[in-house]
Image (cartoon, rainbow, N blue to C red; front, top):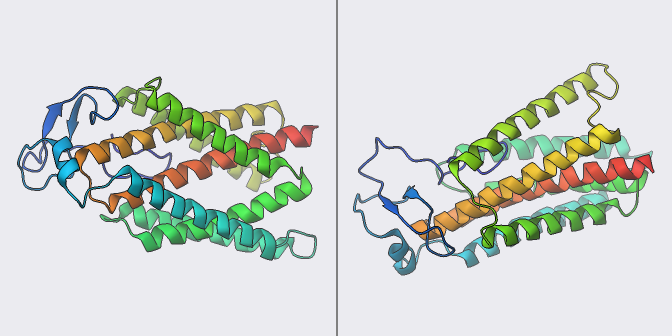
Length: 288
């Protein structure tokens, strides 16, 4: 496997059988805390020695731990939240300022997209790039959330945040209880579904931009609600893939800096879920 995100690829899920000198295979139990499932490949070994991955993870003081992931994820999401609050306050969406605020928000989103692409193609995670992405994404989310709260429903943002938290908690519980099993077949299905979803999103934007009014109808009515729910479900699937990648990285003894990539992936996924939840709730509140 290679990616646990609808758009971006990250290390840790793909192996290259031609690089037999830097990988090792070993079957391990498919239970919590016992390491990667089925015949896994350690992408972090560089000495060619087929030593037990789990033992290396325990003894290497520079290996990634769950605490590292939690701290980096909290830092990244905290940056998103602080930037969102500041942009909500400093970039009002009233009639006099809405054009300027929207312009800044779109610009921030485009730069955030570029930074995320740069980080994706780097061999090593860069905290500066990841936090820069988080700050700019927060600016975009703050303006969009403020506009939604002002013109649709004052409580819709709180509902979207609570919905995102509920989805995250539900997926985490289901993953830890092994109700969700992340396999290559699961990954392939999710990737195919996400590709189709993104194609429809782009088509909808193009139809809207070139005079088709409501585009393909994904921004309102029952079709919009269904489309948004599908987006939330896809986000939940990607969250499970993120959890799998983190679990495997810890079992493999991934270097501590990889916890920044884990935080980056979780942030991307949670932003995705939040935006889709905001879409669904906005449509429901506007219809009322």
